Length: 550
Image (cartoon, rainbow, N blue to C red; front, side, top):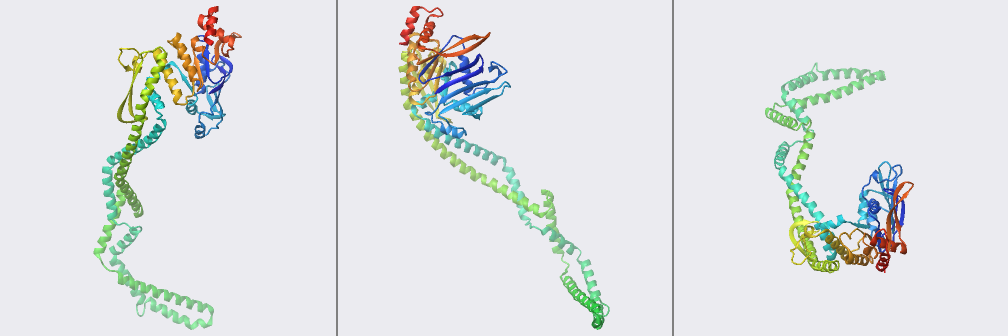
């Protein structure tokens, strides 16, 4: 419940602070006195957008602050989910700066308007003529029926499952589209992959093949050069090897005479050994050299294959081609797995659809059981509100579509008079009838669910006399379980309140401002008498006011 409201620099209000109590509170005042301003300020606290026109003094900021007692609202989870400090006495503050910027706070923690609006759903329900028209909306009608059917836990579980069901459907559609779009791509990728796999590429083989090709393509020149080198090295009398041995023998004779000669001898010996090894390598190389046209052709073919693949894939090395081959393998595997994924998802969707059908049937049966109860209670209340012949027909129409609250469509049919056919509520009910139906609905809902503070904004439009008295009694009965406010022009309703506030205008220093005042018992008698007879209060009006209050 709301326990206090303070307003500073808003519209016609310079400064106002008022405390509220539980039970049934009445707000009255002449047309234009500022009742809508109070509601407007409260709307800002509940998350409505604001602009500079809200400021009374454009040079100062506007501050609206409301205190709420929320210990019985089970809101700790909401506060934890939104990272807010929970307090049984929660304070919501809204500030509008002269710059036009707006700030909002919950227990001094900054919040955005969406968070404020989400919390406000648990705190206050402002029932206006506009909301009365919402009664014609199918979703609102379902909420009424589901409250009586105690369907909210089932619908919550259904909605969680529906969310995953729709997510899976979305994934399946994406996979099906991908499968359709990738048919040709799959075929081309498979062709490219097979081409690369058939090439049997190995890292580093291009360099080896190019070296082999050069040898095989120039085998005659190479063999001629090596054989000539062997002749020069090993010719019996004038060969390099023969001459090295001669030098070695000559130096060996003088080694005893000086370390210098010994060093020269050792170096020549080393050269001789190395040259002998080189000569043997010449011999091996010469023996290995064969003129092999077939191998030359195969080597050339493999190189040309590599060059063609590099050109096709814009690669510079065999390693880059191998990387492309790996990517193609992954792409082909991925596309190949789509069919399996589609099958798995399709089975999951079918299973979830079956579970949703079970939930939907439970919801439907609960609704079917609750509809006669709702209809009976509505008729009972509305008969006392001057609608003795009212009838309702609420028809559930099964659908194959998964809606947010099940698989039903609803026709909420209504007839106010004997002999008239049923029609859709929004088409055949008058404004006054809609107001009374909404009041009856709220009274019934108060028995089945914990409603937030209710503010009835001129719900008495189009009614008077005994009907107004009964409306006041209904709101009074509701206030035993919840906090109720009624903004009214009817004394019959005003007299039913536990407390009575008056909105009025005053002039201070040539400026008009709106004020809100809690009336004393005597002031309340005067206010109700004035509502009965106008500005000139008669004795009979005063006596009538006292009777109404008693």
